[in-house]
Length: 306
Image 1: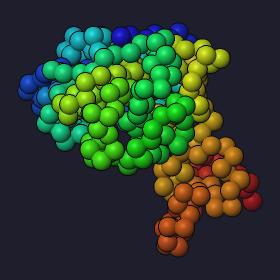
Image 2: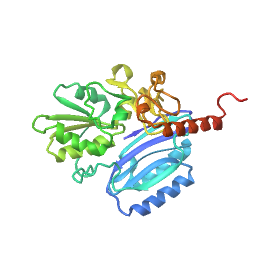
Image 3: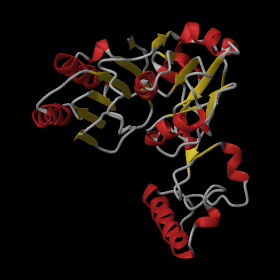
Image 4: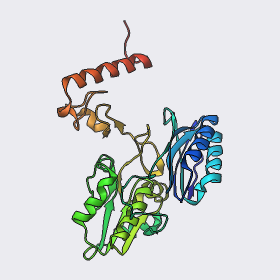
């Protein structure tokens, strides 16, 4: 599925993935890296025997050119491909990495190239998750769910996606939980999670096609069952309905996303700490972060000068 956006912003962003069987990963990595360098693309792409996954950005024409290139190699337009935009450069550099998996789960039975759950289009998602017989699972990590989630969803409170299978084994039972619906940011984690759950005997497994990002693009805010923002892995931090940039930022002490009102917390110190990490920071670490923050302020020319 391809989602397009027209805009006048200087940077165009493509979030993409496709599960597809690949071989000769080192050669593919070198070809992709060379083309990204030629087109001044920034971001990260992961290439593995199970497919390709990543988010990249560049000037609109250059971004379109690299997507054409990737489509020729991986048929990315047959997978998930979402466009958005940003006023500032979203990534500092370009990284193309060969991996064992494009989304790490460490479960050999989870193979989306062979077995996946039932895709649910965003327009049909509200009906699915409003069914009282459906267990709605957020397959993202806890720092992401803190920014926003679907109403009534179960938060596994994982730190890493590799912990999701353990949550399933401890808290879900195919004999009791007949219907399960899952979602994630762009669709890749819930697609792989659906493959895992089917391999474990769950029979009726649904996942949101295109993920939260597609839902926020397609479903009007007044009809939405989504609360908050959707955490994204770039300098925008989070987006809201219509994929508009949100008002969250990142604590430089721990990397936790922060809502504007969290700046008023007594534990918040710009560039140093927040309520999530204040107590665990050593004085040495705190001083180092202060020095870095002050250096960055001077580099940007902010603040007063004598």
